[in-house]
Length: 314
Length: 142
Image 1 (cartoon, rainbow over the protein chains, first blue to last red):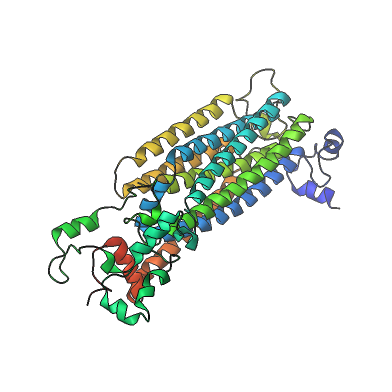
Image 2: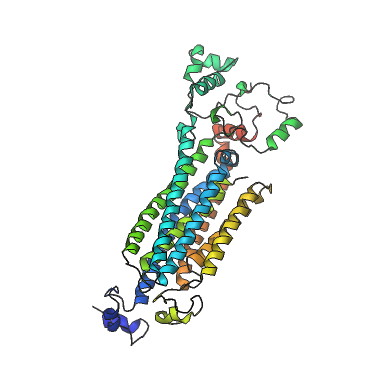
């Protein structure tokens, strides 16, 4: 045991050392002072939080690439997200971050009742966030606003019928010849693939002489695409850009991973609350409160970026 | 740098008379905590309002800028980095710099390959045109 060696090379506080261990029962034998123990734990937490930043950072890069490739998908699909619910959730997380910070102060000043109250409020905020998120998710699942092929499954029978009619190859000699059974065209159209690339299905091509765009066309192309009917079935929306399902894939991955962090937060804050009610924390020893607080603030930080990037796309 | 063991007692501000002192760490005044929370809520309202203002390309930069300000407030005051040992700040900022680095190189790469990817891939061209020029006749043109 290099107690004397580490003691000598740490800060040179001759007065600290063995006495502290007798005085502070929580001080682990491999630390010289409560402060060394506290700062070491905190540095460890910060290193963990750095890995969290990198973890979410990779997903933010994925978000940027998808948005760079299909910007119109993001401005279109963001209209399916509920800005009000997202905004309420942002405020809930900010307030729970505030109560957590007040809780740390309460622990530091030995106010045990206030600490328990703050932890309970923080816990309530975390659970409230999850409840609101649950309503958002279930609403989207109900409308088949999902990732991958599931996005292109019809929600209702009317949808299915309309999708079949829409995708039916009409008056297209090329398709009729290449298809072994022209009458099977409608049934073989896969609903699992993105909306029809069959340009002939579009009524009257508004165009000038071959290959020349009219002014009207150019204006139409320059107009940004926005969801006209966020309440209606997305499959029947003629304005839906290709690859819209990708928006929902990255939406579920990022908010889902964040949601898992909130669930973990509920667990650790609940654990703190139990410890606080048993009087475990004091102004001498409150490291767990401080470190869980740091974790909870990072969960808040991630949401601070997720909210504008998903809910507030102009 | 102040000796760590005594640092918590060096900061006199932030606690009223008769209030217990923390043995370790820094005590942040209630006023600072509430002011930070209020600023975060106000910035949230501003960023929601900014969504309805058409600034073109600048919209996303404004949104990200507000988010960065909010993140700075949280990390400095709620997470005590304002008073913490600078090394903790370096860990956080360092991780963020690496994310930015990864972002920049990935975007450069995607930007470089975007054209060739589309040129050698008729389906991607069609998708691109479907999205950006819905009336452009390409595949169905005789």
